[in-house]
Length: 327
Image (cartoon, rainbow, N blue to C red; front, side, top):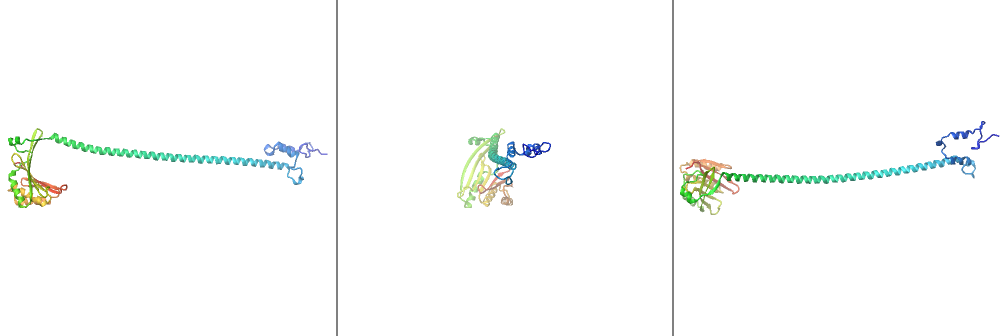
């Protein structure tokens, strides 16, 4: 009677060894796939259910391996679930971190924009300050220029009022102008008659301003007496002669008139009285020169100069007649 293996129940080889047990022993722990408990259960109960015919059952070894596989699959599923949880958690963390980063960027951008706004505001303020300083500098320079110019005039000449009795007693005429040969007594009656003939109602008045100034220790005198005619209907239209207070000689003649032809006629009439030797052609040429002039007028007629222009401010033509030689 053949011997059977007390462990697995299979027949022994002739040398007394069980090949099945030897093969089982040679298997690695990984290849066995079952625990010692499971192995004992297989050997003690080869089939899973003792109440069912063996031919209709799955061997217990296969059943245990199936349970082990199910356990293994459950472990893998648990591991996979854990990995999913970890991945999701990591994803949520990354998203939250990214959100925080974006918010931080937005806050930084807002801070930068706000800082830029502050910088721009400060720059604008600095520009405003620079502009204000520039404007103040311009004003200061203008004021300084005006002040210096005023000081220059004061340094050059200090004007004093001259006493009438003293200058008349001294008998010295003005030296601040070139004196005409004609006196006020020569021209005033003639001009009175002229205005009357022209049927122009004129108001007449006379005044005096006697002064002198010191320039480099030299006394410059202006002894002036004004004889003024002004239109009764328009006082801005004027004709006047200024004469030396001491001698009565003319210093200059002035014409202010809105109508240029009337002004030119007054200049012509004055030249005729001042110097009767001036020829008619010369007078006519002078008058034409005044008419044709654009802007400032500077003409010579005999020994006299005519100067003037149109004033937009007063809407008038004005001309002065001055002597080029002292008489």
